[in-house]
Length: 411
Image: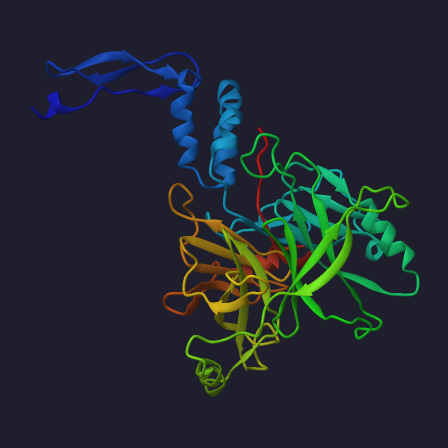
């Protein structure tokens, strides 16, 4: 009875068909022919790819044979995005969600020479400059080797001969797809850069610490945690009319209000020897715009030098008001995970096929990844990003700032 209940056996083999033993419904076994890998129906391959949340596994699956490679390309647009990697240095990348433990080697292909410096990332692209930007600005895809020059930004930096400029952060706004369905990575994005004058830090009227696109608008965060919206208009005819220009800056939020209005949490943090890091970030998380405040242990002997991360406070911009909004405390990420860094931050959906990352968790990394971890919002505790991050960092030959990168596979 046990043998009769067994399902038929399908054996997929490489090369020529082979004979295998399969259960016989009448009892015993019978000879059956195995099939080639190329005979797997495309719809079954789609199910296999859906279960693979690692970019490496998806690429390996498509490389098994030519029919699989062709079928996999058809499924790529409908697959949930693979989980991000952490760029640690030139040709050194870490898949922290799907295994980790070792830095993988990827080449930037036709990217600029060895004098290029990394200034962060945006989505699946690394932002590089040569000679501080005056020698060129580039967006490079380490997974395909494609390079997109950002000539206008390089030209602007080159013209500022009296100032020593430093690119702090770059954000991208991808154009929508022609027939809907989200953004289109195949078309050039709108590039917005936050640039700092390091020779005179006080030569500005508004101190901006972070920028992010949200619902097609560019927002900035001031040093006192107020949210600003930056108006963008069409470029002038004299300038070619191709690039947007800033038409104005407007405050849209009031100061943060705690739910109980007492501010006791901040007092408790200070009593525990925890102090604010002063590097708040903006992140679009689904249909919400979040601000994150990081608290660090006040310990000068910390491995990072600035105190290791201990707690995150998360706030949501409440746009219910007609003309302004306010920050309110966010207790969860609503089925999402955050990947947070000084140069790239992004929210991803987990569950429903988007496995790999943990719900309501913040995967954070600082400049050199020595201060990194996974912060659980429910239990308010931090655990290691990977078990042996110190050993991984020792593998990096030419380190740069640590930044998240989100792989993109084109069909």
